[in-house]
Image 1 (tube, rainbow, N blue to C red):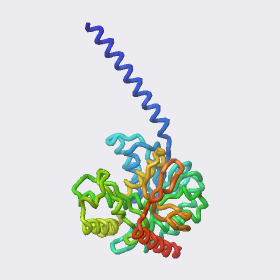
Image 2 (cartoon, rainbow, N blue to C red):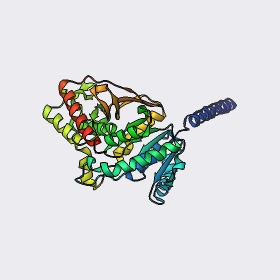
Image 3 (cartoon, rainbow, N blue to C red):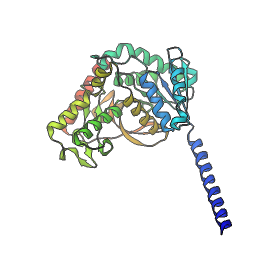
Image 4 (spheres, one colour):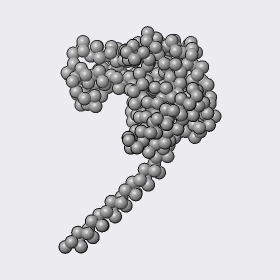
Length: 338
C-alpha cells in the first residue's frame, strides 16, 4: 500500500513539473517585448514599476538627460524584483537612444511637470521642443514602435508627434483619457459608496481642466445607470471633481501626480503589447469621426498590437455633442501655438 502511494505521488510530481516547464516555456516565448520610457522622473519611473509588476514585458528601458538618473531609478527598481516577483529586466541610460533600439512601445513623459496654479496649456512652448527632439531620436532606433504620449499638454503634444513624425496615425496615442476615466470612476465610486471596480465610466474630449467630458449619462454601477442611485447635483459634483482632478493633486503635491498616470500608461501599454483589444478613451487623430478632422483628441478606441485599431462611435446626445465641439475648439486653439 505504501509503495502505491509513493508511485502515485511521483507520477503527480512529474506531471506538475511538466506543466510548470510548459508554462514557463510559453511565458518566455510570449514575453519578448521591449518598452522604452523617455523621461525617468516620477511619472516615467512609476510607468516602469507598474509595467514590471505586471510582468508582461521582457525589457523596460528608462532614459533621461540627467546624468545617472535613469540608471539609478532602474537599479532601485531591479532591487525590488525578488521582493515583488517580476522577471522584467529594467535598465537605465543617460540620453543614449541606441539603448531603446527595436522597442515595441515607446512612452514619452519628457518635459517639465505642472506647478501649482499652472495649466497644462502653459507648458506648450517648453515641452513642444522637447517632444519633437525625443520623437526624432526614437524613430531613428525604433521605426516600427507604437508611441504613447504622456507629456503635457497631452492633446497638443500628440498632435505634434503625429504631424512631425510621418508615422501612421494609429501608432501615435495620447494617454489622457485612460487617466481621466480612472479618476472619474474613483469619484463615482466614492459617491456611490462602492468599490471602483464595480463602476464603469468614460471621459472623452481634451485632457484639460476645462476640456474633458466625463460622460455621467453613460456611467453605470454593475450595469445599472448611476443616475438611478445619484442625484443630478451629486453627478454634477462628480463631474466637476473629475475635471480638476489633476489640478487638485498638483496643488497638494506641488507637482504633477504620478501613481495614477503610471498605472494608466501600464494598462494602455499592456493592451498593445499583449494584443488585448481593450477599449479605452485615448487621444488619437480624427479624420471625420465625431465630426472632427486634423485634430488629436480623446475618444474610445480599441487597443491592440498595431496601436489603436478602431475608433468606437458613441451615441452622444445634443448636449454631449456640443460639449465635444467646444472641447475640440479649445484643443485647436492650443495647437495653433505650435
